[in-house]
Length: 98
Image (cartoon, rainbow, N blue to C red; front, side, top):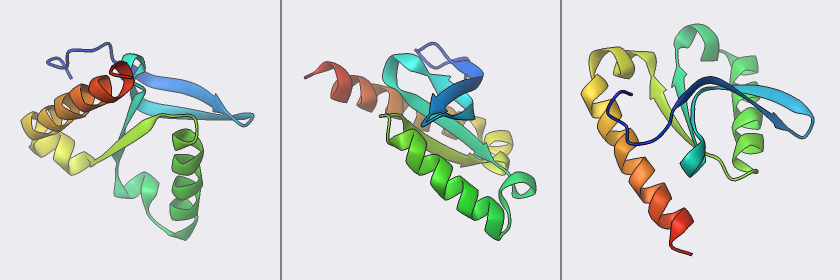
């Protein structure tokens, strides 16, 4: 995340429909959330249902979410950062060209 040309907040709390959620990372300038999923926290039927609802609510307030596995983050960090940089540029174009 060091080479991302935008402010990045870790463990960022947001409130949606009176519910509190924590994004792993948030880039407020471009309304981009980044989630690092692991089997430990995102496995099973209940976790799946909760994740789908959570993602839908967060998206409803204009935040785009990117998802990476913990394995991707630890084994290919350069690739993950490149994807995030592309998403930041895409979001800037979309948000600021109107």
